Image 1 (tube, one colour):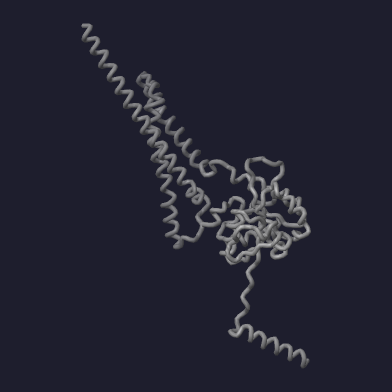
Image 2 (cartoon, rainbow, N blue to C red):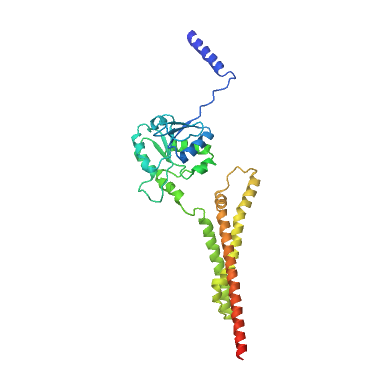
Length: 330
């Protein structure tokens, strides 16, 4: 008992000497590993360092790689894997072979696959699925592949949780898309065209069709039924020119309306740091597209107005020439 008490007293003394203010030792920041020192790897490492993590790069040539972010380290792949349990794979699919040779070093690690393809359906198997097959002892998570290096600068529950915590500390919003069966969808996501244009285009097509058929019935069909006047020749120019300014003004109002709603919502909540509802968030994201469509329809209105004026001017000149010839002949 005496020895035990003496050791206890010495431990207390050591604690006092090491922490004279009685504070606990500061926790050591988690070490994260990044394979490949490219633009994306450099930007990701810099962002991780700014978020309080330690970063080590795995490289085939650790002594000849480019400049590192301040505070980062570089080692060979085998040594780097021993430094952390979470590894970001910033490697193209065609270079995955070396990971298979390191399967024993990657046992139990969480591998975040950031790869993308140059076009859709480029390979029969998703990159993340291939990586999981090559390194079966690791937990592969598909994520962060929709982020660019520029943006960074300015089921596998444990693996997902680890990646989600890192992404949250980076200031990102995490969306769980399920198992690796959804990896192909994520890999094709950066290749999608007009992702924010779909809603504005659908709204525009709906409004254009509604007002076109409304004016067609009101101006053309009604005139033919009630007055027996055939003015169908006006459909392509005069009638269309009535639709363009209407749709343009509505799309312009839809461009600015979500900002007003968002402002009132923030005032009501008393904070600007809460997320908007999904419908408002989606609406806010496509405001620019709605504004561009409004500008395009306004431009079409100008062109059609010019064409209408030119047509009437030409018709007036032709009528004047005919009248003059008739007078001369008489």
